[in-house]
Length: 326
Ligand code: NDP
Image 1: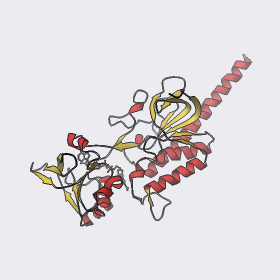
Image 2 (image 1 turned 30 degrees about the vertical axis):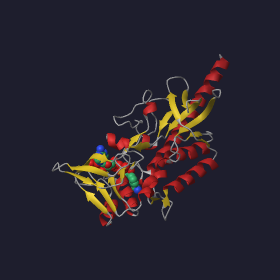
Image 3 (image 1 turned 180 degrees about the horizontal axis):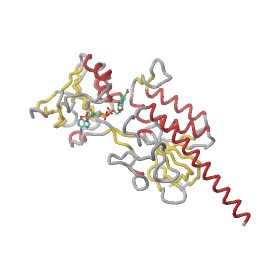
C-alpha cells in the first residue's frame, strides 16, 4: 500500500455540485488556494438532469452536465486543485480539522467547506432493492434509454418525478405516475406539462406494494390507499423519484444535524458548531434545494471561511508579537 501522505491546506472543499464549485471560485479568488475533493458523483445531482431552465445567465437553458462542466472550468481557471476522490471520515475534535481521503491520506485544513449535497431516497421494499439495476432505477436520464418503447412507472409527485416522467414520455408510450396523495407537490408548470402529456397516466392515492419480477422487472403491484384495491401494471422499468437524503453521515459526531440529517448552520451564516467548518448547498438546505441557491450558499461559505482564516491569522500574529515582547 502507498505510504500515507499528510498535507496541510488553507481551504478544503468537500463536494463538487453548484455549492462546492461556487465556494471554490470565491475561495480561489480570495487566495485561499482551495483543494476540492469531488466525491463519487462528480458534478453532483445536476449530472443526472436534462434541461436546466431556471439558472440565470443561460437564456436558452442548458443541460445539467454541460452547466457543471462550465462551473468546473471556472473553478479550475481560478486555481482550484480539483481531486477525484471521496472523503471517507473527518475529525473536527482537535486544534486542526482533518479529513481522510479514500481511506488513504489526510488533509488538514484551516477551513473546511462541506458541500456534499444529497442522494436519492428509496422506498425500502426488498423487491426494489433486489431488482435495483435490473429494471429499478432512481435516474431516468441515466437509464431511461434502456426502456425505449416499453411501459414504465415513476413513483413520486414532486418536480423530480414530474421531470423524470416527462423525460420517459419521450421514449415510452405509457408512463404511469404513482402518487400517494390526491395532489402533486410539483410546481404548477410541471404539473401542467404532465397533465398535457398523452403518454403519462397519473394514478392518485397510489402506493407501491411490490415490484414484480424474478431476474428483471416485469410489473408492479400497486394499492389504492383509499379503497385498498390492489392492481398490477405490466411495466419493465420502475423509477423512484421520492426526494433526497443529505450526505452528511460522516460529520454526525462533530456537528449538529436535524432529524433528517440536514446540517444546522448558525443564523445568517454557513458556520457549523465546529470552528472552521462551514456547510452549504443541499447538505444544509432542505427548503429551497435549487442549483442557484446552492451556488449562493457556496459563495457565503467561502466568504465565511475567508473571514475565519483572516481572523485566525491575525490572532496568531498578535500572539507572536506578544510572545516576542514578553
Ligand atoms: P420532493 O420532496 O419535492 O418530492 C418528493 C415526492 O415524493 C413527493 O410527491 C412525495 O409525496 C413523494 N414521496 C416521498 N416519499 C414517498 C414514499 N415513501 N412513497 C411514495 N411517494 C413518496 O422531492 P423532489 O426530488 O421532487 O424535489 C426536491 C426539490 O428540488 C424541490 O424543491 C423541487 O422543486 C426541486 N426540483 C426542481 C427542479 C426544477 O426546477 N427543474 C427539478 C427537480 C427538483 P408527498 O407530496 O405526499 O410528500
